[in-house]
Image (cartoon, rainbow, N blue to C red):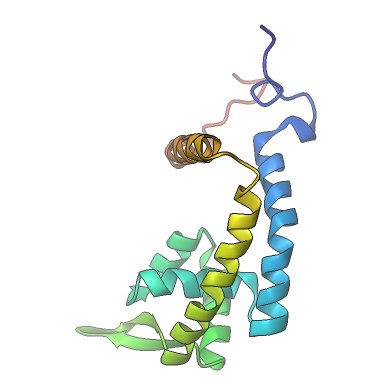
Length: 162
């Protein structure tokens, strides 16, 4: 049995992270276009709205962690969403230096209108797989996600320094 090109990549196109990025870029174009043209938000702002819909009252630093973005990008997106009237900042009780984030009513309504549309794009993409394949992909993605979380920066061995 020969080694998989995914486990023993020889080119960029063989690498899992590149292939996942490419899939996300191609399949996500419709989401990005819909967000920007129909709803007036960026994909990053959509991610913030979606996380805040599930995690009301989080700190900006917690939202950065949930979305996988750095704090500066998170801060800019939150400011933009606040200016658009979709997110509000409330001082944390007992510590007014910290601000809790939550969706406004307009933000919640936008989320409720956009989520089914994004879910439809997801369903269309996943329709190419059988239910067993989709279940297996879900299992594999969970395992890869767990491994990625366990990998700390700086722990990658280079070919010259295994």
